[in-house]
Image (cartoon, rainbow, N blue to C red; front, side, top):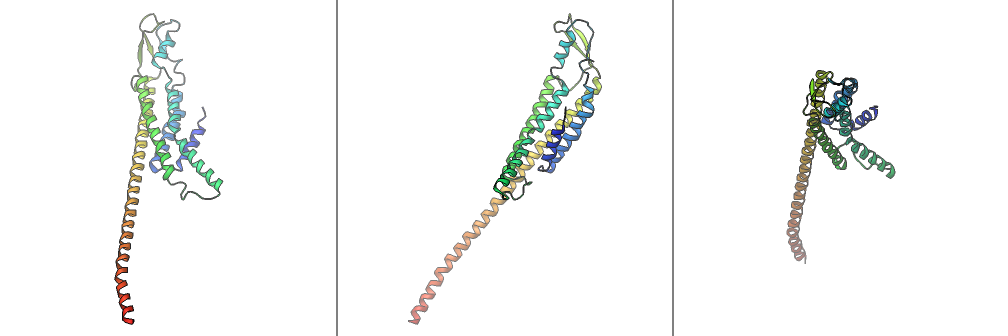
Amino acid sequence: MSWGFLRDLLSEVNKYSTEIGRIWIAIVFIFRLLVYIVAAENVWKYEHNEFECNTKQPGCENVCFDHFFPVSQTRLWALQLIIVSTPSLLVVFYVAFRETREKRHNQKLYKSPREIDGELLCTYLVSLILKTGFEIVFLVLFYKLYNGFKVPHLVKCDRSPCPNAVDCYISKPTEKMIFLYFLVATSGLCFVLSLSELSYLIFRYSIKCYVKKYIEKQQSSKSDCHKLTVEQQVPNQTPSLAQKLIASI
C-alpha cells in the first residue's frame, strides 16, 4: 500500500495547524505511520499461515482463526490511520476553495490566509471533532473485537467443524502484544492532543470574542459620553450669543 498521499496530506495540513496540531501530525507520521510500515506490518504478515490448531480437521483452523480475528489487526490499523487523517481534508479543501475564490475575483479577500479564524476556524473545529470521535470509535472497536488489548499465547476453539474443543496457538504473541500496546498508546495520545487542541481553540477564540465585545462596548460608551458633552455645551453657548446680539442692538 502506498502512503504517499497521506504523507502529502499531513504535510499540507501542517501549514495551517496550531502548535498542538503540529505535535499531533508528528506523532501520526513518525510513531504511527512509520512504525506501522516499517515494523508492525511485517509482524502480522503471515498471521494466518502461522496460526496452528492441534487438529487436522479440514476447515477447523480457518473457522477458529476467523472467530478470534474477524478483522485483520493490521488492516484495521491501516483503516484507522486513513479515517482519522481524512477530516484534515476538510481544511485542505476549504483553503483550496479560498485560493480559487481569490483568483476568480483577482484580489486578496483574506488578510492572513494561514490564520485560523472565521470560516477556517469552523472548518478546523469540525475536523478536530471528527478526529477525536474516530479515535474513540476505533479504540472501542479494537477492544470489542479482540476482547481487550491482549494477544494470548493459546486460545480454545469449539466451533464447527472442529470435532471438539481444540487448542490453537498464535505466532509471536509477545511481539504482537508489544506493538499492540504501543499503537493503542499512540492512538490514546493523539486523542488527548486532538481534545486539547479543540479545547484550546474554543477557549482562545471565546476570550478573543469577549475582549472584542468589551472594547466595542467601551468605545460605544465613550462615543455616547462625547455626544452628551457636545449637546450640553451647545445650549450653554446659545444664550451667550443671544445676549451679545441683544446688547449690540
